[in-house]
Image (cartoon, rainbow, N blue to C red):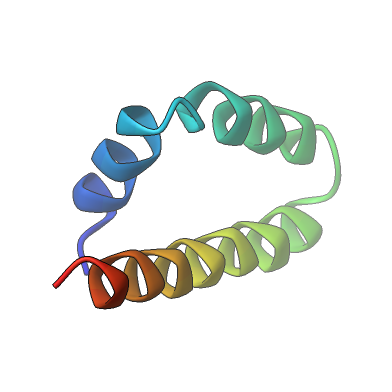
Length: 57
């Protein structure tokens, strides 16, 4: 899944601003922590999309 699709999905559900705020907050911490948490967010996005797509096919 592409990052753009993830962003569109979050925006459609009104979660884009929340995720953006979280990423900004994480950016204030060390870069290694940011990368780790950023990857976790992307993994959650992938899981959510799989769940969403699976329940609406």
